Image 1 (cartoon, helix red, strand yellow):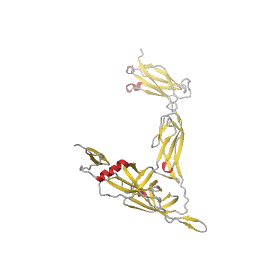
Image 2 (tube, helix red, strand yellow):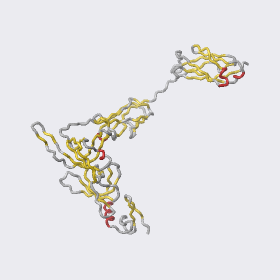
Image 3 (cartoon, helix red, strand yellow):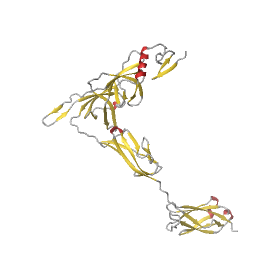
Image 4 (cartoon, one colour):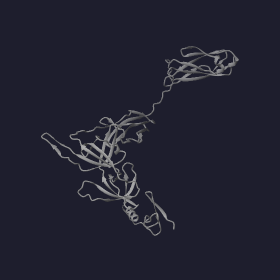
Length: 401
């Protein structure tokens, strides 16, 4: 009898007739008690968790540890073998992050069990070498030795704290002496160690520190932009005036009908009007907004000129041509402009057409006597020193008769 295949997390199970649960049969078509019981639970009580770094989803079910009268929020979870969860993974569920501490290898090929610790401390430090921020969620043990050091003048809080996070690309960037603010105090990293997928960090409280970093966000923008144009805005986040190279920036438009913005800060100016683009720095909840006006592209002024004179010149004769320039209204003549004349003559008659006697706004064009030029045409160009005006007149050479 044909069996319908069911694939979960890359593992294929087979469904034969007479079995309500499609996961009761192994790939050898034999009944498997652990497999059947596990997937019963997964179907009935399963939920989805996500990888903190990649967003990849995993299917599992929880069993909460007994943590009465403890500050730790610990969980146990069960998940199929090979689904991607491992010691050092950080998963998120209902807004909380959990560090996977271990992985029990049970005597079956069906599932694993792991303990998860609530990684509710976000260790964020600035690396001056790379100008990047390093930010990793951690589980923190209770502080030790945090007793006030009293004297007649003052008392200070001292002590150490141990933190754990996953062994990953971000935690590998942590270095001794880097400073971070967490749990109400400034700390300095004393040591960083890696073992079995776990990164262990020891930090010491910086006594008497009153450092209050200044987070600033700047966006350069013009006051006006042309309708139909685009521009890519650039965010410049800083910590204590030092640049940050890896911020999470979220762009949004206050009026998308006038200007739209993409995830990378590229703004398209659609309609005329005033608008603002908001820039949000997610890690430190810093926002800045730039405002501008979108204007229609100005209409280019019309520069009109004409060449007055005959469209023909007889062979062996001359003709006078006059330049007429108009102001932007296209009606009023402008006598202040000096004309610049030039010729466009075919090579075969180039020596027979000459330009002479340029006086004021007039120029004289002469044609040598001879039949070789008859029937040919040439162009008389008119412009000015700015190149704003331009006109051309086609002139044909005719016979004397």
